[in-house]
Image: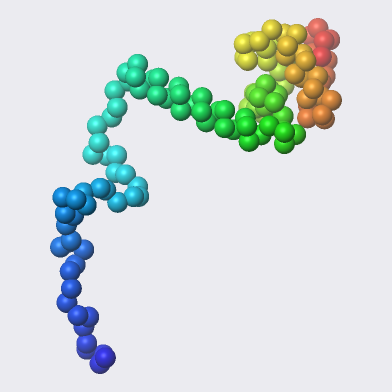
Length: 126
């Protein structure tokens, strides 16, 4: 081929159109700027709940038996990371559990060396 040669003429991308049998969109990113937003409906909420439940179940199955921390323990560690030191009562209220349940969770984290307990400055309890 000489330096001035050009490729053989052929179809350009703009000239290619799908046939009625081949009208499925190509995989890839979807431009949502032209799509209407989904209105919140009870049906949509039910689908989202089911998808979330399946995802949560799968994550728990993958973590099971791996020596990973439990969901309540993870919640406590996340809360402490985000909000800093907390009382047992505050942690229990945030996770919507009773303080004795939170005490057991924190005791397990302390035994694993993941948290340290210190006396509260005003009442002395840890």
